[in-house]
Image (cartoon, rainbow, N blue to C red; front, side, top):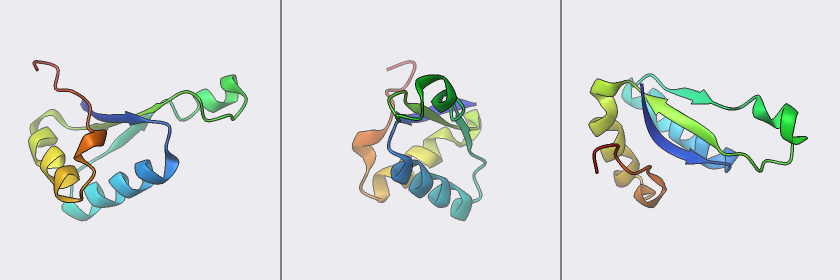
Length: 77
């Protein structure tokens, strides 16, 4: 799994999950339970991951949706 984006914007996460689901791309959101530690303040960002082999497609979908500025920097870039 590769990181697609990292954010504490729950609406953005939900939108990206929906985009990926519609495209048939598996998505995993990590760090959701960190809110218990932080006191549910929404300070700590959540990471949205997709399978390695679908990362380019997922990044293109996010760009096409007009939210490409939210993408994490590629590991090799």
